[in-house]
Amino acid sequence: MLNIATINVQNKYKLKKYNGIYKNEDHVKMLISLIDKYSLDIIGLQEVNQRYFERMKLNLKSPFICYGNFRYPQSFITKKLYPFSTYNESVPIITNKKILNKKTKFLPWLASYVPRIVTIMELEIKELGLITVLNTHIDYMKNKTKIRQLKKLERIIKNIKEPVILMGDFNMTIKNKNFQLFIESMASLNIKRVEVNKKTYKYFKDNFAIDHIFMSNCFKLENIILEKNEKYANFSDHYPIILKLSINNNWNI
Image (tube, rainbow, N blue to C red; front, top):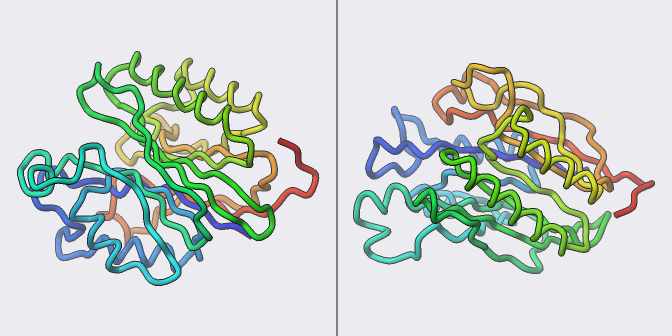
């Protein structure tokens, strides 16, 4: 079994020094409790600012490791001066699996002024061997930028020979025509979108997900959970998606 999740932890932008503490709640510890509750093995996070990231790394228990670079280089300016200190986000991956390689790549972003990135991690899974996990947060403003970012992800994934898990906040629903084309492109590579047909952003009017997980056909979906417990009401404005996976013995890439 392999338990994975994508979680937008919601950067609380109005709090200039947000580090995971909000309304007397410790959201970093809530994240750790989610990892423990569902025995998660691989977690993709979005909207993780520098202060949150530092506290999260301190609170993670062995053998978990967290990796992900930031939108802007780490420096005194980006760490201490507003607005960089608040808006400099990472899309890290947390895992308890053996990491063989890891990197962060930029997605096309200049037209939207806010850098976007993808974290890529090669992991060794006992039942499968090598897999690649990608975690990202797509632009929310300009459709042309979204298209360019999806195309970049396609090019990256087409060059990956091992099984793939792609997750993140795509800021698009399955009603978006360009996202539909991306889903079709992934399907042609034997990478399918997990059908989460409920809203994942709490304040979205339509009942459609903007957070998504794709996976190669070597993975078999055993269970899907959209975490809506009131305990996590202030934790994020997104509902975490949690998947329980097994290995499909009749698979091919």
